[in-house]
Length: 257
Ligand SMILES: [Fe+2]
Image 1 (cartoon, rainbow, N blue to C red):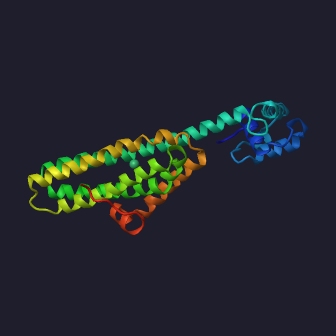
Image 2 (spheres, rainbow, N blue to C red):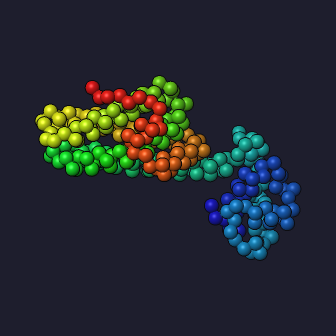
Image 3 (cartoon, helix red, strand yellow):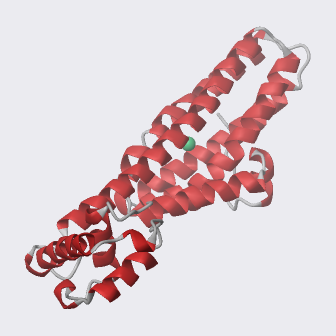
């Protein structure tokens, strides 16, 4: 957040957060001026302050401090600082939800196109779409398993998380079978029927998985950030689904029935 001398309330909250043990009324203006200028987001001209501004900051800081002393948050954050943090957390969760939704959209579209390509018996397109799916799904599954699912254990419990991992085991096995089918030439009616059934069997995972973001909204900011960091890492590593499953992931895959 960029701060100028006009942002009296925000400066007060920052000062309270940074120096919760200090009684603002005991602070000299020279120290107050220095502390404001030292705030990480402060970008205004140090010489542009006036005694009136410093006094307003001191009073706003004192309000924060007083509320913290007597309020239900005593010793912790003041209600306004708390609300501000809540807004930051919500913004991060929204960012996650958007990113997560965009990834599921891509995966959804590739899978629906794949059904069509099998129906048209278009071998080249089938192989190209399977390649795309592997590139999208590899890093996606990876950060889900390495960061998202562990973060959700406290909410859902171990059993449901194990079920989600089991869905991945089957999805990987299904991808392997679809690759086998894609190599057949010509594709028989039974092959097309099987491929359609297999792709449809993983579609609900895409829509169900997207709903997990509603629970991510309840996670603390640090956990949401760690999921987003794990996502960056998986994308940078860039292992497609089968390479990740074979080289990094430590679970068996399950062949489709
Ligand atoms: Fe997912």
